[in-house]
Length: 319
Image (cartoon, rainbow, N blue to C red; front, side, top):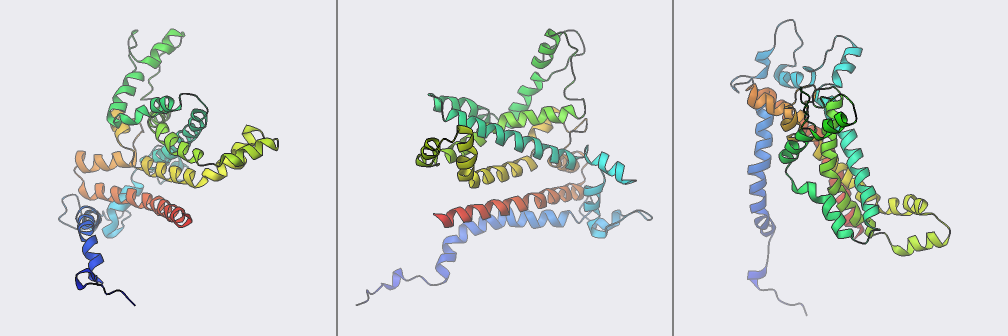
């Protein structure tokens, strides 16, 4: 005998949408509308009064209403030959972002994995992890100020920067870390690694603890070394976590702004996409170009977000 459900408890097709309505309204106001409005502004001139095609100059390349995108993608490149395109790309904001991705993601994830493995074997694991994670508690602006002092270069005999004081103490000549190309971008990436390695360590450490101890013990009893057990058992088990950490770090790196803005302001060929967007919007007052750079940045991030969501769904399906 079927149980009778009171009318007040019956939910039609509309009820689920009513539950979702507050969240959907917030998403529409704060995400969907700004995204479409940003795209619309990227098709207009700097005053948002005319289409960007009005910026075209006769006899020069023009992408019509996508003229701001032509500027965003090609203005930093010398397109006179393939050699000059290659050379100028690596000192452009796109090339610098690629350097950041290669350097920061590789450095932070590798260092985070190493520290997660080592911290798992020490007696005071929680204390060690807390100390390593500490830089994440500092804002990026604060970290930029701290490391600006570390890299400080003085023109006189007195060096207040820690690194140059060490160089001077060893008998070397002080180095202008923030103006020497391409050393300056590398030194900025070091700051990013210092900030993010703790985050990678915490996530990967949780993954390492999920590795069945029986598997590791069986491998050791069969004569496997720690190195072999790590690469043949630990890494395959934590691979989904590793992929999520890498894609998350790629997204974070594409959005990098604070460190560059505070330490160099994007000067000396250290500009990145987010910093360039800020400069076009608020320094040059070129709304159309700034929003076009923003859209390029969003388009670059979307594939990694889709990959991350796909990984999350696969993990949920396995549970």
